[in-house]
Image 1: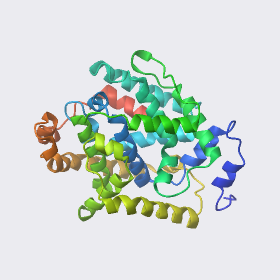
Image 2: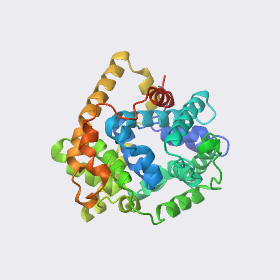
Image 3: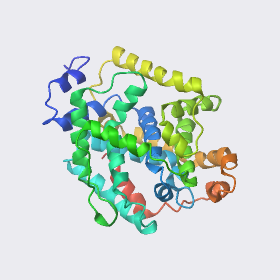
Image 4: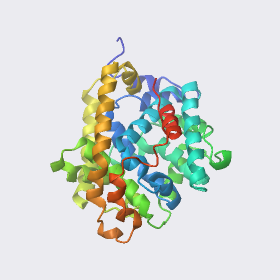
Length: 352
């Protein structure tokens, strides 16, 4: 309670990024978050990871998987896992248990989709993208990027995180870049690699974008939500996934608008004294029950909404997955809803 109104930047400035990189990452990533921002970051992030045929196959599967049948639950579980890692860091037992559950999940799905989890560069890209996301987003919004100390800390934090994951058949992740600048370079090379458009990847990305819009924007403003998420997304990802780019005016204005909003929040609001994860852990059982009820309602209503929006996409006439979308949406149980898988996903994102 005695901390100054703007204490986070001062605290980061007082730390040594080579020794205190875990604390710097915690300070720079675990505060000023809410459900909207968690969902927004998820929507801007995850589509970049499924631009390959093998990546999207393991996510959409045959029936849409959780991105269709439990769309908001998937966001919540991913956001919870990220919040846990960001706050506790790569050496904490809670992080180790969470990531071990992720590794077991990947091993489970690798048996059903052999080879899909064997590409080392896919893991490096996910790690590099995670380390550089806020820097690149700030630049896109016309703001200065993160500080040099934060760059060093981000690079070292995700270097340690890279040692906890393994690829198919237990293969360790190798080739983590040697600096923050190399992380950015790796991302740009990966993103600019020409690729065909995987039909299932188009559905995965559209489901992720639509979930964000469906959750936070009333129907008359769905168009605005889509323009916002596309304006903030990577043009290379939209192109690869066969998703229309934003309107040129939206592409010009909306990133700057978001930058102005973020600047206003940082200038005029006190730094929070409690992190996102601490706020969630402090919730009463009734508050948690209310959140679960809201998520269950969104999950229940989303599949039919999504099917009606995308089943007749003229760009994907003849795609068996688009053609089967209505039937997949009406099915009562997704193939992804396996008890073993559900338990691993809960453990991966557990905040308790």
